[in-house]
Length: 405
Image 1: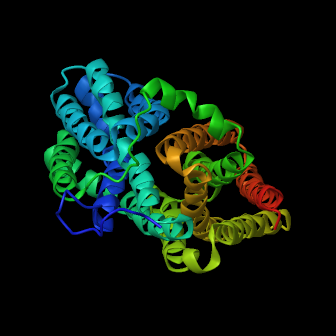
Image 2 (image 1 turned 45 degrees about the horizontal axis):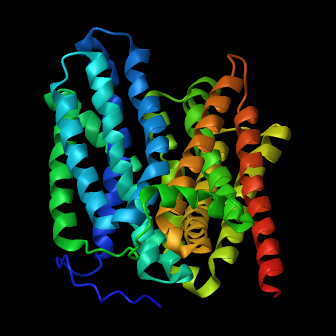
């Protein structure tokens, strides 16, 4: 049971309202993809190749993963509130730098600096775990991460409209305004929730082996990594499959790529409603089964000679539902193995999840050649979803060994 005072909205002396945490995580998701439709115009503006501007995605992800390793332990040492406020200030400065950048190189430097907004995701989850017990945390995290599902569905379309009307800088101007608004909201509403510790940052980092030695931490972490890996593989291969295999145009591909996001939103809602009742382990297991069955459908149908865009993207929606059930519950599990290291666990787990997913995304792009069918991508996603199920079954077995139940 948490000893924190009951939250009051816009009272910085109490824990935050859940809407504040939703906005914090949503801003990070918006920063990831809102400007993507403007990449060709940005390449022309800076007089460089398109692939150079695409680095604004891969470099951002790489910096995102690295920062997650440090944000958690820093917040365990100094508190969630100062780290979040500092990160938001740095994000606003980086966004302004991106708007004013005179060259592509300087733009990419400021773009990498924008990755500091990942603190909103890492510490938003840690704040939830500070406030409530494990099963209730899974429920709250499910609601918090719903913002991460909605934003990818509408962010690129909104950014494309801004780019067409006002130019590529308008997307970053919107991010700056949003960053300032979230900074004010965080300052006004988010009170400190971390347990007070006198340990130095070096001592905090020395506690990493305590997490790494926990098989249950790795079980939850790998469940999240493989579940997310299926989604990242989809992002890496879906445009190719939609265009080259099923002959969809760019608009149809754009809507189809949003299929797992719709499913993820639904899965997050299910987590928010039922995680407390069912418990995190059963929710992760159910979600992993849904994802695996979802990808087994196109696998079997393609083998039988029935392949269509409807079958492929419709099945991916089921994978999204499963992931929406797995991710918040696996995250809660990671943070609950060692509650006093919740920030560190969130950062380490997030970094591993992103790196693992990025590898599968790159692999999906590599295996899809000019004559490929959808089968290589389906197989990668099926195996990754199945491995998430294996990971949680192992975790449950280990938990029974530890508790003797």
